[in-house]
Image (cartoon, rainbow, N blue to C red; front, side, top):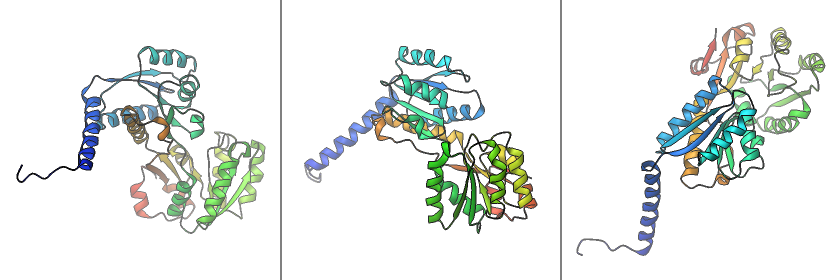
Length: 317
């Protein structure tokens, strides 16, 4: 026909592929609601924020979902009944929020895709080809880049750690620090009684005290001695969360739990649209928020850039 360009075979193939993808997405959007089982480990606010972020992300991705929420309230006993409910309800995907729910699902479910959020590390998903998700631990590179941004010029980074829990992370941090021009002054703390000597050994060697999640070093019982060490020696302490900043840490990176839920929702949508779960590796949070304690900064005689203060999620005055 005059004026109409001829279609070559490659063009037809590209068009057909595009049409199939659009049709599949439209079918998911227009069809009946997809049943999704949600196991929530705890009733705390971050879990609810993540769940709301998940709901909104599914909606943005055009997925009509029917969520069946199973609150476990910290009790492992409820997980088996919840997983039976997921199977009976023919759930096409399971969202787990928290380590308790995730471990229960990974241990007993192989036939349903699992997307996990609110777990500390990707180790919670090891050995489960049907599981992926978003873990809470920031990469060492992220932690140390932010340390350099908030505390420029501080070269010697002290860190206390329990080797049975964190040796691998500290080894990685040592390599990363070296590449950034930092020196990691690491001290092993095998038990709480080792803490005073480990802190004293850093008094003249560390410019800043960095923290990693550690069940021996960072506990409610160690808050006071660590904060006293920081103030007496004018060595800023980098906490684990906003709670530590309120207790006197100079700053802490934190997570946007709503956005973690959104990341989980985007993964879930991709899986429901046909992407193999095994092709989606677990990832850390893509968004960093932080809190700053200006009262501590003044006591340590530190100047924090005004732009950093304005961008902080929480500022303790």
